[in-house]
Image (cartoon, rainbow over all chains, first blue to last red; front, side, top):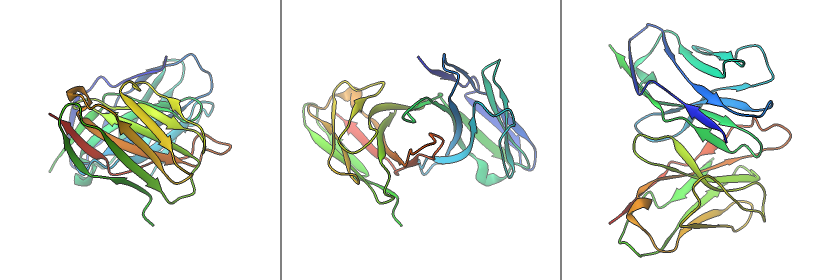
Length: 113
Length: 115
């Protein structure tokens, strides 16, 4: 069965600094997909970034990038130049077939002005 | 463009009562999903419908039933609500054609309390 683990319940960073959120996962499949979702206080789930497991190149979306280590089953999210609007819960997720998402427990990110 | 619409936004039930959570999407997506989110946890899949006319169990299906009414609508029913079903419920949809990397779009959620 798929499992996704986020070992950091809470993280904080100074505005304009860089922060990295950790995620590990476990799967027996060779073909799968990884995602980071952001959930602000409004509860809306917003896709931040996605990665295909067969791609070696790490995905990047503006200030957000990932460090995908397939052998270690690790998928960390780096946020550069942190902004106050980045404050939210961040969830790592994995999908296999029919795009059924399995989520981690989440990391609450606080941005200090 | 409304995206994924869930009704109601809030609901309070007494133990044993029944209710149906409604979800509709206007993006012509073929796959739809119901998740629940408990405090301090990520979302967990209850049921999903890969295409119109099909439904399958997810990780936590007990106590729930679903209906894929048509391509747009996917409802979640609690036949006899229990306090353990107090949670925030999210509906999502995706087009899921050749690539499962298509984005899942989420509704705003329904906060349900069972007393």
